Amino acid sequence: MKKQEEFANQTSMNEKLKYKYVNIKNQLIDLEDDVKHSVESQLEMLAKNTNSGISEVDKLKDALNDEVELLDDAADMFARMHRSCSNASDEIKTRIKEAKEYESNKKRFRILKPTPTNAAIDYQENYDKHFAKGNTFYKLFWVFFIGCFGGVVVETIFCLITRGHYESRVGLVYGPFNLVYGLGALALNMILYKYRNRSKIYAFLWGMLVGSVIEYFCSYFQELIFGSVSWDYSNMPFNLNGRICLLYSIFWGILGVFWIKEIYPRMAKWILKIPNSFGKILTWFLLMFMLFNSIISGTSVYRWYQRVQEVEATSDYDKWLDERFPNERMEKIYANLEFVKE
Image (tube, rainbow, N blue to C red):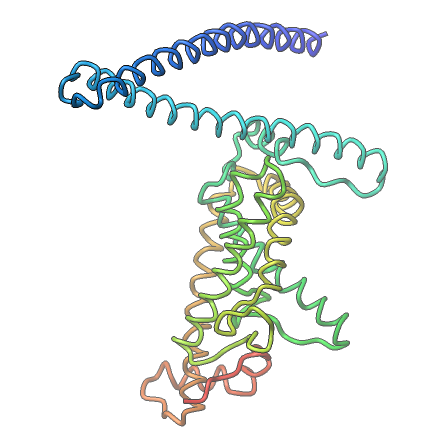
């Protein structure tokens, strides 16, 4: 009964909106005709007096300049309205389509739960007043943290399937974490979040751009700071300095769609299960751990590079790194890392 009343209220609201829209639309059509006839008349008068000099018709010139300002302002306003209406229309169609797909998948797959819609996640976060709702710091950290872990798991399984053996894909010395995957997940979420309820084409294009930029700069800074590279696309067509290529940029676009439509909603649902009572405390604890892990990892890789260059340890910390992270251990952790010869 309550739902029927809500639907009835929404229907009534739609009728009011339609009534207002029809009235405004008719007024705008009339205004367009009036402006057209007025401007045509004034321009005809301007053309008639051009030979005698435009300075002789100052009032007409001023009137036309005023109309130019009004028309420019109207053009800007209608352009904004066009974008706003197009975006709203696209979101409505996308939400209806995804709701239908969810309903269909729910009936088809009775054992495996279908991916929740982003709209449903948004509603649940607001309803629960969750500490990590929206695209805030807490949500972004958990996206980053899960991305660091999940990326390693996925690529390790992929390596096992395609190569038939285990190969380390981690990026930190403690735990199955890789900052590249975490940063990729973080960047994708920051950019694609506002398109979560929009058509897939937006996620594809932005995913393609964001992923390529991340991959390029990760490669650039790794070589700049550590003198090493972990991938090289120089033999691939349409590559840029061997750091990115068209094929993998397209993969990033596909990942963008898969991320915001499939991975993120499931991830957000997991995050929703973290209780508000200690969610923030746990977030800060894990953040400190990741910072510590990153510092130790970065300095151990740099010290490894120094050992390759036959640079002796000059501090107690360097000696501790040599003892705790010798070359043999580093080669197992970073199986694909190669130092660039100077």
